[in-house]
Length: 115
Image (cartoon, rainbow, N blue to C red; front, side, top):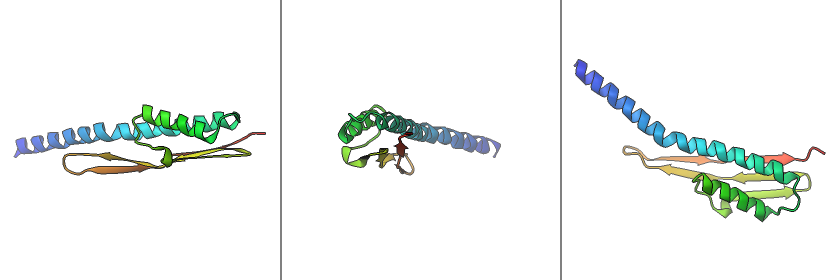
């Protein structure tokens, strides 16, 4: 009975490590992407020469570098007279042996001019 408990404990520990190994990078990429679109909005608020399409392409390049499945239609960029707003909605599918997981993310930011 004692060996069974040890075996089950090791199995639970190993599966927890495996799930964390698969899930944590997805959340970390979303965190980095949120930070990147905040930087992009902050910089583009004071760069009027960049169009909405230029901003969208920069966001898509960053998403591609982070292996985030994002298309141009999923990225919304609005440039107003007072600032820039960027939002994107995407989902990531992770196939796990027992149960597949779907994570939905909606990073967004809005930056206004200080003057």
